[in-house]
Length: 180
Image 1 (cartoon, helix red, strand yellow):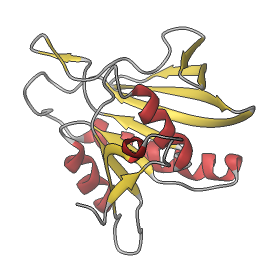
Image 2: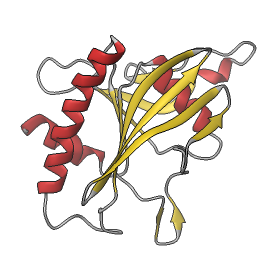
Image 3: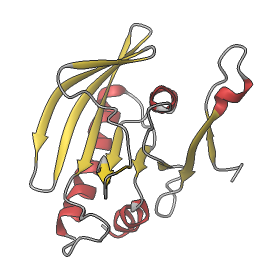
């Protein structure tokens, strides 16, 4: 949908560089463009994914998918396993990681053109393969923690951008967000 799609800034000499498979989603009641719904980054779209994170001043990324389901790749690993990773002009540093029963929280520092921003990455790891969870409590906890992180990082970074959510099940996340 053209009116809701995220448009990246055009790179010099590349008019097609504005495209990313992502759309703004309004939140509950007055939250205009509270979220960006997108596909998980592929090997050839990781740099564009980080361009979007930077351009839109995203404080929190929510990943509710596995890297593989039924031996099929669903998402490329785009966060560092260890200390840091370089994706195009973006240096991504892993500052900390917290393990919860059903999800992981990573604090990332993204550096671009000598500016640094902190972003939290939530990875829900307990979603059953080709199914839905039996209990919803861990997802409700995740939603509450994402909202707290968004508020905390908005204060820290002095801005408030949309929360990025990527997965096949993102609509459930949006529904839970609106009722929690």
